[in-house]
Image (cartoon, rainbow, N blue to C red; front, side, top):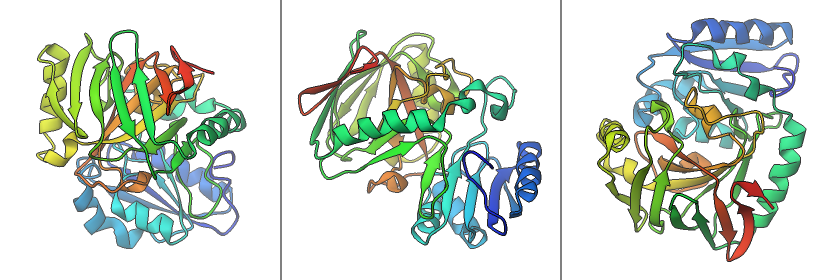
Length: 310
């Protein structure tokens, strides 16, 4: 409330949660009251937030506030309802509370990352992306991907959410929406698979004209393919985002996807909807595929080498 949202006395705050995280939401509620805000807790079913249209249709009317926190199991950041509220002047902080070990995300060390330090580094990264048309990413295990970011603006997420019209996240990252029909090449996934945790073995994922066309049929590949299929939405196979982790206190350990994608020395490909990230694509969900030690070139100029920003 103090360091990220910087809540002001009298502000209206809506906390969106679900039945799995009421205790954490009520802790936020209590501290918001202590800061002088007027908080309201909206409880949605834990299965619904990733289903974009369902969340949009049922919850938009409850989101009219100065600030909104997404404190549900799954992220609601990329829904139309949140996009529209931010456009109307609300500010939104995404803290998806899903973990794989039963502990609370709010107890994680990575959430103590210095927002000012992340801002300084992230701003330099963002400045390098200005005017860039193509991003080329390779990794030691065989990733070779090309993304078009022509005409797309980037997003710096670092927890700080103190100005109207801001949409940000507990993930400390630089994120940019990618042109939806232009991602080409192979991702060798050796980090984590979004909400379903670490890969047990690297998975080769091939992209053509922006779409996943094949997922390697090993054990982790089967888990990933089954998860994507569970959305029952062909739009989930589209690459919509490129992200670079900036949090030096985070580890890609499979405990929490929001920490995995934050970890310095990783990059991620977000698949599914990206409308709230500056893109044009909608789907029933969004999640990230995290890989280690990227070398990243922007129109041929080096930005990162083996996971180290230059």
